[in-house]
Image 1 (cartoon, rainbow, N blue to C red):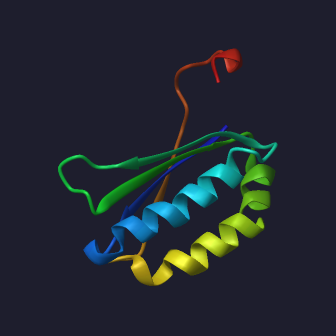
Image 2: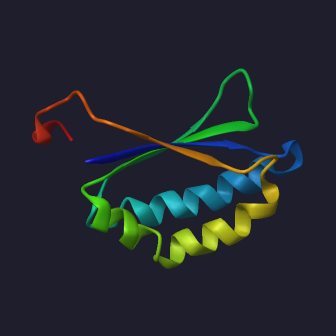
Amino acid sequence: MIVTCVYIYVKPEFIEEFKQATMLNHLGTIKEPGNVRFDFLQQDDQPDCFLLYEVFKDEEAVAAHKQTKHYLTWRETVNDMMAQKRKGVRHSLIAPTDPDLW
């Protein structure tokens, strides 16, 4: 499993537009065969801060995701909405170890 947390800070005037664009990316991503999870979160105490929690089956699924129309559209659409460059951090999965739980 490939787990990535993507931290995104959005300019306050673009929060609603960012949410709409990211929901379209979310809806496309969860239909991808190699996607396991794609959670879209907004920080409660800092509403301009967002987190994408992405889990893909393998590197091939990650690469395929980055070529999809919904991802490429999202990337182009939200680029100027960000207050700073987004940061993706890879993580190693420790638990759950049972693939049926995913």
